[in-house]
Image 1 (cartoon, rainbow, N blue to C red):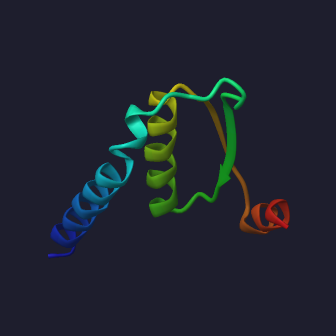
Image 2 (cartoon, rainbow, N blue to C red):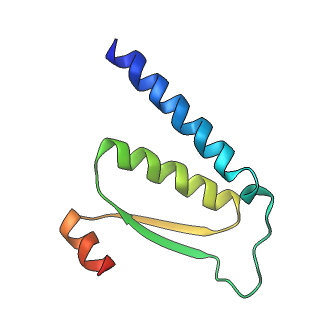
Length: 80
């Protein structure tokens, strides 16, 4: 039963993500914007999956993506 809920949740997430990015995938990169994106993530199962999806979407759009795992405190410090 729990596996079914996880699969359903993942499918809903991917559907919402695909609807939300449909127009973005057709956009071109402005010349004045850099193409390198760096972001950190926490090694939690849900966050790791979302980070991988975001990375693939950004790479598809032409960005050079670099991700790195950090502790929560380090990420919050970086945001401040």
